[in-house]
Length: 128
Image (cartoon, rainbow, N blue to C red; front, side):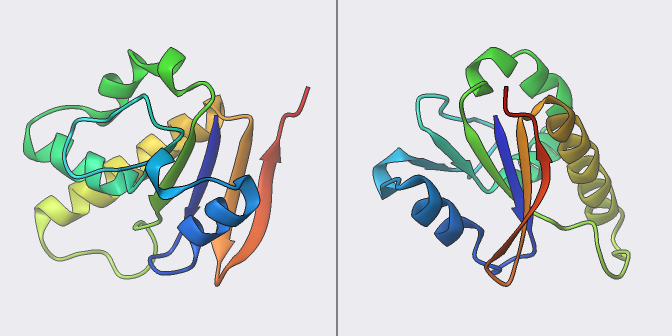
């Protein structure tokens, strides 16, 4: 699994499309707590987390049972845990749970990249 994260509108999806030569059809865009595991790319994981919280689900537990399906995937997530702490309780929980899920996925990923203004920063590379 490869984990790609960074701020909103920092070029994460463009980076993935260019580096891995994937088409739009290979990308699943998160809209709720359901993920289509048949796609190569899972984009917008922070939206998945928000939906899980809204539906009283633990996002780590949901994905923990699906780790075998994520083995060869590229996961893209906005980094929402920087900056000012949100005033609304739900938004603080969303921020914290997204951070926890990113930590969990980073531990289980072979590669972790931060994208900042379209520039790749490799944080982890466990190539065998």
